[in-house]
Image (cartoon, rainbow over all chains, first blue to last red; front, side, top):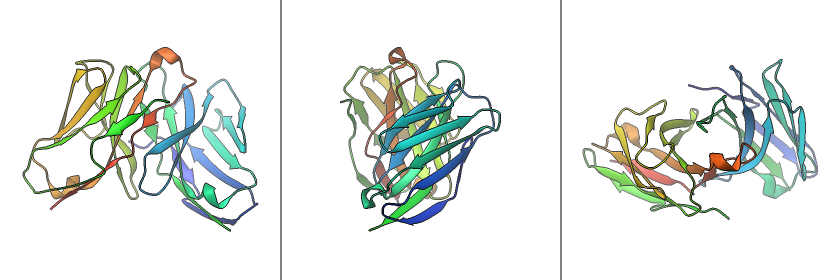
Length: 112
Length: 115
C-alpha cells in the first residue's frame, strides 16, 4: 500500500537554483522521513521530522510538515550537480514497529 | 557508522530456483527489513523482523520467506524464483532503542534477474 505520494515525479533545474519536492500521505503518522537514492544504489537517510514538529533544517535541506493537510515538503537550497538523485518520503505510523511506507519518489536532475 | 551489507550487487537466477539474499548489519540493530523496488511502484515492504527469530509479513510477502537466526543477519528466500520477482531488493535496519530521531540504514541493494 502506498502512503506517501511525491510531487512532482521529475524535476530538472540549473545548478544554484532551489528544488522543492512535495509529499502527501493518507493516515496519521508518528514521523515522516526523507531519503535520497543515487542511481542503482541504496537509500540514504536525510532528515526526520516528528508529527509535533512543523519545520526542520539540516544544512541546505529544509523540511516542513503540515499534519492538517497531511503533507510535507523538502527544499534543497543552492542545488549542486551532486544533488542529482531520487528523493523519497516515508512515513512511520504510531507504535514501535519501525515500519516505514515509502512513496514513489521524485527524480531530481541538477544541470551544471 | 552502521553498515548494512548485502551479499551480492547483481544476481541472475533461473526460474524455479531457490534463491537466498543475505543481509548483515554490524551495529546490533533489532529491526531489519526487506523491500523490493520497481519502476513506478516505489519501495514495497516484503517482510520485516523485530528481533531474532521474529518476523512479520509486509505488504507483498507472497512467494517469499525470511530467516533471522542471528541478530545481525536477515535472509530473504525466494522459494521458487519467477520472472515477476526480477527486481531491486533492498535491506535495511534500525534500532528502536535509539529513539525516533534515527531513520533506517540501507544496504546497497541486490539487483536480481530471474530468467
